[in-house]
Length: 114
Length: 115
Image (cartoon, rainbow over all chains, first blue to last red; front, side, top):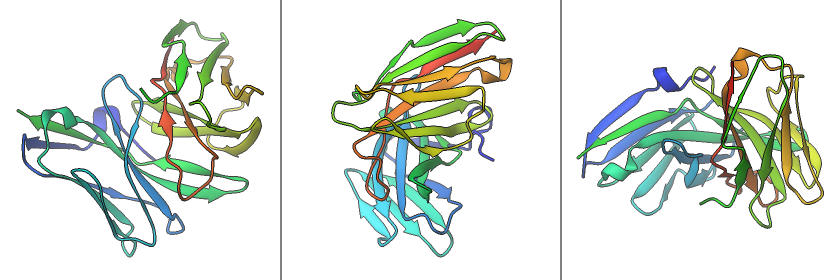
């Protein structure tokens, strides 16, 4: 099952360093993956997405890598500022009858020290 | 601001009671999703509606129900509330509810406390 809050994995980095957040997904049939950022008191916010026919996608300061062989996603954040401190979730879209479900991973808490 | 509006922001009630959470999706979005976020269970998908029809179902309890109205707003009804239902409930919306290319836009959530 998934778990967040008190048991969240935590990554602590210095301001200006690069951050790498990892995620393992569960369904080999998933073909669309998204990273979300959740700041305290707010809902998750889209960061970047990637389809299964790609292994890398770059955005502004962020890069997502997808390794389908081992069902692994990573989010790389360049020159991380304190404002990036938040919980980061990977999510996979699983297609079911009549619709799809976006299933979230457990989340990783990122602390950026000034 | 995501454009998704949820009310109320906070709700405090007692066990056994029933509450209704409301969500207005982004302008133009036809699909609405409900998620529950608790400390020990993370973000759990509850249910999805598309243009008034139920599209997908997750781990939604029988005590919970939802609907999407013709104006596309949605309500999540929680009844016979238990202490364990205390959580943050998020609504999200997307344009079509199609896989492979749709990200979700989340509201700020309703914090439900069952005492």
